[in-house]
Image 1: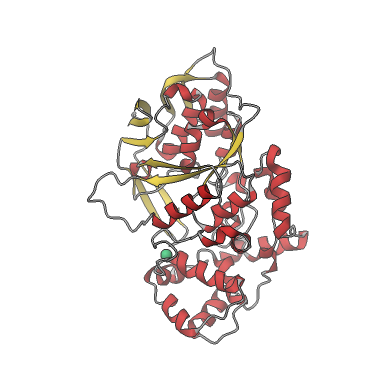
Image 2: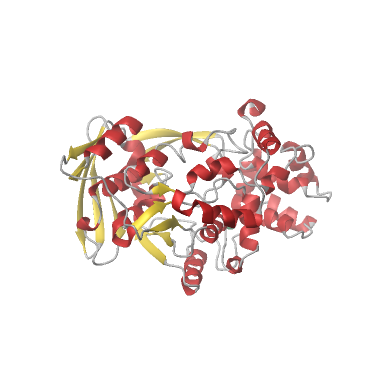
Length: 423
Ligand SMILES: [Zn+2]
């Protein structure tokens, strides 16, 4: 893959030219719908709007290279060729960890070192989980909102960024450093989406030396990081969330910091509910400010979880509406395990009503038999995803809300949602 770029007034345009051995499609398994889908490259360029005085010289060549790898990862064959040479150290690590050559190599270039007064960066969506992550990180953490540019006006999208903009503005008003970075990077592929779990961190990567960062991360939870409740437990370092990003980030002196990766959605919901940030954090990316769409699976799951966490009664008429959501019907009727089955088990374990569909769901996800209390606790093995510099701070914040899981809790978590159970 050949990468070229131009940059004017901070507006970076990246051009991507495939080479012979670059795949132009790849297959992914969609764990929500239990289907496989072919993802294709749909564009050979993307743009990203950085501060007006940003230039390519504002970022270390190794970090720029890592940002490009994160943006287009599955479409890179054996080699990625960049405008500026990378350090031998970076080249060798990518070769070893991801089996790709990054060229050219600049033998004179030293590896990137974060400045001593560096601060952390976090990708922030305005949703519950990344808001919880922002609460757990130090207050000087820079929050990056991935502001979707729609490349053509005729492109239809269900996305509504109003609520997320509101969350960004409220965060900024509270004194948190917030950046909304416009980009059409998600349109590189069809169907539209991120090409890797580090792709939404491309803005903070490109700005890592401009602002001085020593860590980047996102607000994914235990259910995604360790695949709990939909694919069977797997060590996060070996899932697509962690591999190869955990190792590659060390080469540029940025630690992959994932404050919520050892916490279930139960806890991220509690952390946000216990904070003043609750007023603006909103999981749904289709609704309006303080008005989730109530027409997507996320609204199905998160609105029920919210009620359970607040000990509110769940009326039959509310459930009638939720079970009528088209997206929810598709997810709930997909082959088992249902996506986020663990959270649905938690919700239904705390449901005492008689709604027939809710009772059927309870049986399906084993909310009637499973132990679910471990979801109220922290999986402390996940602290390897906390930068040493911020680890104590984040741990202290986590332990204000939860206890660590006991060995028995961990056994229950792994056994309840192991691969073998589902097979
Ligand atoms: Zn929604």
